[in-house]
Length: 301
Image 1 (tube, one colour):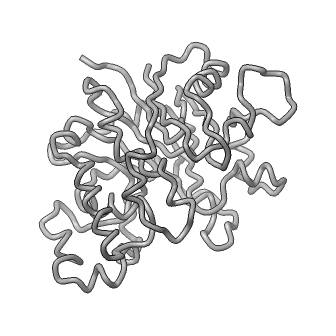
Image 2 (tube, rainbow, N blue to C red):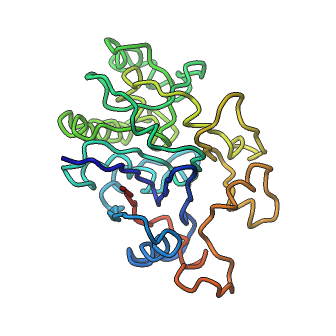
């Protein structure tokens, strides 16, 4: 019987009792080995028990279509589609977190989210958002697609951000949801039905079937708007997890010396060390760990 808590990150996110520390993530350059990533985590969290499950980019490369932003085409954006394949069969549930998130609460509370029998995924929903804009006119005008895709679902389809999800892996495997997502990606290759990379296939499969989670678990949009990348404040209400989704990333703005106010919160937990800093020789530098092909990592304790 599996009794541990599993947190999975695109690159990695380590969650603890009162906070979380993001690991190095995305740019250009050569990919580090698994042992480099293992050393980076172990050096900062010597008591943490964790496993690293590398994700092979070639598992999805042939399915990826061009997006409105090149960053959305990186294979690691699609790693969440393959969690049930990457993790051992004995793991019944996982929390998926993007690499641009910072937990400021005990994620065990998120882990304990109740999933009714009909639900595979739990996530904060945003039903005030214009759901139709996530798909093209080609999609909505096709009589075999459009509203017909979402007919018969538990609720009206709503936008949800895939950067924070609780996933029942057993139900995912039984329902072959990875393949369902891939089928939409294959259709996108034939006719353009969406523009935003890895998000729309998830919406096509799960919108209207997601178990809603309190918005405190995804205070998203802190990266700013996708045009200017301008600073944004926290939304009103309690905050358990901060998410720098959007164009601007805190590590880039900090490096450029132009941080937004909330980026200073991120800085306290960033595991990168400055170039030339020899105070922690076992932790790889920012350059050494900058790659869009880093392994996904799962942590349990």
